[in-house]
Every structure is written in structure tokens, then in C-alpha cells.
Length: 409
Image (tube, rainbow, N blue to C red; front, top):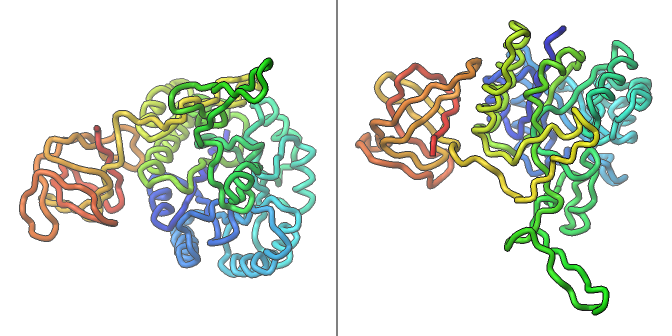
């Protein structure tokens, strides 16, 4: 049993730093114009900084050019592939055969990863991509564990496999959806999804004996979220996944917060390491308790255990996190007064939890004093009113820059 790579999303350089701090072995991100998350904050400068920072740590960066490209996009694709080749990125994620040919020409030194958008659901398909230059295939989320095992068993040793283990599930087949383009003129396959599957819809049934008379079909007074799915969570299945020989375990979430990333990455990092160190005493419930402290929809294993599973619709259309929220991020530490960047209202008496890298259990404490960072006067509360607003606070343990703090509501 080998330890798989833990692969985290990075929607910005700041998020990439958080991902590495909390245990990611690699991050994936996009270019500013050619990935399926074009609204992420990763501009070209951030991308360069992320690659350099990762390589200093001995970690990896994979860059997505996984759009389905129109012909008028190929000049930009050639340019970006050439730049990524010079930057020595560790892999380019793609799904379009035309893009693959350009990458092989313009970035011959870079590994090619085939995106989940390519709908790889068989070892025949995986072997096809390997013969055409792929180093890794990212398997479709629609597979169950037996199908994944078949692919791992029937593909060459030189072809790596990657699966999603946590995060949002797209209603479209492996993310290939035209609903957003049809309803909002924002193409999901070009990186500008409006998440139309998360909208509230009103349904009407036409009376058989009275054509034109429409009767509303409603789940509640807000309508019904007929397309919205729960979020994938395979924390319970980690022992079985590790036994399967998967090379990389991946999280969805380039648009999620630093708090979400810190919690999810740190939890899976601990789960994987704990299982490898002591496989006979794996208790998934303690990891699930941590994951439930993030803002998430209901959780599902999707098709991993059962192709007939129907428990993956989120009919309420909500994200749940009744007890916790993003409190802040450490900027600097001193024994008397540490500076944190606040993300939500903080007040005297609040219970905070410090997410410690490499440690599952957070450190809990109660705010006893707050200081205005400009006047150094004591205050009773602070509200976030602008980007990167800070406050001074007394933290009972030594903390380090970028450690994430959650607030108990």
C-alpha cells in the first residue's frame, strides 16, 4: 500500500499557500482564461508565484486547460502551453483532443493529465489516452469502486489514476453540461458556469382535461431544487481507496474559501496518514465531525459504493453549517497580541478554534480581549468592513502565519 498524492484546488496564490500548509502534496489551478473556473482569482502573476513557491517546497502544480475549445481559441492555447513549458509546470490538465495535440507540440516536457471532463469510464478509454501521450487520467465521478478497480488493474504501470474524493458534484455528465449556456449564455465547457443546477425552479403540470391551465408543483414555498446534488464525501471509504492503488486523491473547490480548504485538506491528510500508520483502528467518524464544520450541502458517496444509489439529491437547495464559520487568518504572532485578518464578526466571549496543520483536533479558546490594530485601544467587537481588515487578539498558544481560525456561532 502506497500513500497517494493529496491534490487540492488553488483558486489563487493565497489559497495555494493554505493548501500546502495544511498538507496538500500538489495543487491544481487554471490559467486566467483557459480553464473551467475562469472566475477564480488566479491571474498570470499568481500562477507564476504558485509554481515557484510549490517547487521551493518540493511540491507540484498542475494547470488546467480543460475547456472544449473553439477554433478561435487555439492561438491563446499555443501561447499558454508554451509559457507553461518554460515555467516547468508539473502537468497540464486537458480534455480536448485538439488541445492535446497543441500541448504535445508546445509543451513537450510537461506531463499530460486527462481531465474528468473527458468522461473516462473504462480502461479501454484510459489506454487510448495513454497511447496518445497521457501520463495520468482523472476518472469520471460516475464510476463505482469495482469499475475503478478494473481500470487500475487493466492499465499500464506508467499511467497514473486520479479520482475525486470530496466536493461539489456537477449535474452534468462528468461536468459536461449545456444548461448554463442555454439559460444564461455562460458556457460551463468554456469555464463560465452560472451553476444553473443550483437555482430554484418552479414546475407546473398542465391539466389533462383543461389544456392551458397550469398547476404548480412545489416542494415548498421557495420552489424546488430539482437539479441540485449533495456534495461528494468519501472519508469513510479512505481505507478501501488506499488499498486500490489510486495515485492521486482530489478535492473540488477552486472557488471555495481558505477556511474550507484548510479544514478539508487537513482532515483528509490526517485520515490518510493515520490509516497508513495504524490501519486496524481507522475511525472515520472523528474525521467526518471535522468536515461537518465547513459550509457544505448534504454529503453523499454518490456512485462509489452502489451504482443504484439515489441518495444524492439536495432538494432543499441549501448549504449547511449551523455551528461554525470562518473566523480569521493569522497575520503575525506575539505572546501578548497577535494580529489576525478577520472574515466574520468577532466579539469578547466568542469561542474560536485554531486549525493546526497536521493535527486533527483544533485548539479551542475564548476571546477575552480585542484591540483596535490602529489605536491599540481595547474594543468589545469587530465587524468585517473591508478587504484584509485586521484585529489584535490574545491567543493562548504559539501560532504561525496563515493558520486558519474558525468561530463557533
